[in-house]
Structure formats: C-alpha cells, structure tokens
Image 1 (cartoon, rainbow, N blue to C red):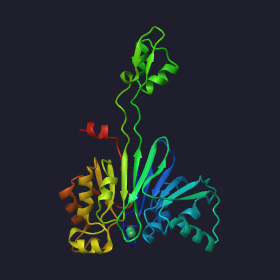
Image 2 (spheres, protein in one colour):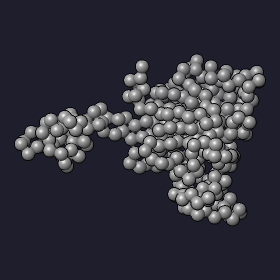
Image 3 (cartoon, protein in one colour):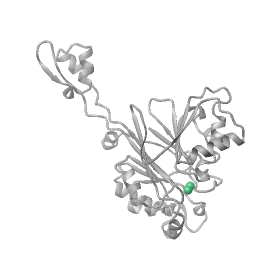
Length: 318
Ligand SMILES: [Zn+2]
Ligand SMILES: [Zn+2]
C-alpha cells in the first residue's frame, strides 16, 4: 500500500504545491484510489508515474473548491486518447452528485465510461474481499468526511513442507487447513490448521482527515491506524485563525495522532501558503511543533510517496 501526495497546499496552489489530492496504490491491483481532487490534479498525474486510466475510486471529503475543482477535468480526460477506462466510483457528500451532473449538463460533457456517484454517511462506505472503507463527519465550515481505509487481516502462510512431513495428502484438505479448520485424516489423526499456519498477516490501515478542526471523531476514525494523513493548515501561534476557519494547527494534528495511538506515522498536509520559505514562521516550525507532541511526524510535499508497511515488518526492522 503506497500513498503519493499530488497536492499539499490549502486553499490555493503555490509554485511548489498544488491543492489537495492523494493517490493510494493498492498491492497487487493495477488500480489507484484517489482522495480529493483539487484543480490541476490531472496535471499532477502527468508529472507522476500514475495514469489517469488507473483510477478506479475517488473519495471526496467535502465540496470546497480546493478539493473538487479538478474532478470534472480529470473525469473528462479519463477514457480519452484511447485508454480503456473502467468504471469510476465516486464517494462524497450529498451535493457532489448534483454538482457533477450540472457540470456535465452545462458543459455538454459526455463520458465514454460509466461513473457512479455514491453519497456517503457515517459508517461503511465500501467493502470488498480485501479492503473496507469507512467514514465519519469532520468539523469544518461545510459537511466534511474523513475516511479510514483498512486492509483485512489474512491467515498466515501455510507451511506446505510441514504438512507433507506429517503425511497429509495434498488436495482439498490443504484448503481447509489454510483456513485454520481442524481436519481428520483418513488414518484418524486430527490436525489443527492453525498449527500449520504462520501468524496472521494483520491488515494495514490508513486514515485521511481533511479539512477539520480538532474533534473527537477524528481520533476515533484514526484509532490504531498505521498512517494518519491529517491537515495542518496553521501553526500553533495562529490557532485563532484555525478556530475561525475550522482548520487544524500542527499541534492539533499531532494531538489526534497521539490520542489515536497511530502506529507508524503522522503525515501532515494542506499547509497555508503563509508559511512559505522566507516568512517569519515556516513549515519547519510546524513540523517541530508537531514532533514535540508526536515524534513520528512527517510533512508531505507534492509527489512525496510513502509505503505503508505491515506492522510485523516495522517491528522487525533494526
Ligand atoms: Zn481545503
Ligand atoms: Zn475546506
């Protein structure tokens, strides 16, 4: 599971940062899930290793322009230039469907592939054999949702050699043992599947929380995740502005990570352009403020990529 930030500025793009979008690449699937789609996201795609035709799902947090103005352009481009485009499922707040339908109608845009818009409400948003996506309300000027993406746990690796040494005949019995079931062999021996499987592979978890001021629901959404992506529009000294505009400071983001017991990493994004290099307060200050509370904090920049590792691998690393 790998995340790539395609935009990390709040409100408006700057010379070095585009507005919000994060791409999630899933293991063993040639598909990309997108979280938010600010203006210019399709240009960021051109500058990345992704292809727009890989997009399978788009999760939208809220209707502010810096999170959705890139949607129509990106969707219109998908399926052009002969790229076969699979269906795109878009998840987001109630007015997203109206917005897209209107854009489509007034610009007379025709999509050559199916698009389905799902209106989300707190709870389960999407589920398949391997993944589950849930959402909950954030605290922002307009209705906004944070998302939690969980990879399902998988049974541990089946020890084929050991099974063979016990004289278990290959075939359907292996399948049952792999699932942890207890089987009785033709000679009457009872074998427990769990004795032949390694420790279960714990699924990776990611939370995406923007835009929001600190709230308890964010903490619950991010509970025990491996990686939390959280907005940090303002520095701690500008907390007044954060309260007025319902955005987070770097210290609020770190507080959420601390209380949620985030396992691997807090990655902050959605920075106000006021902290660009050369200003009195810079992004290094935001990072230092957050690390004082939650040391495992990183700042995202455009095209910053982070591999979410399995917890066992992180624990085993030197
Ligand atoms: Zn925003
Ligand atoms: Zn917003």
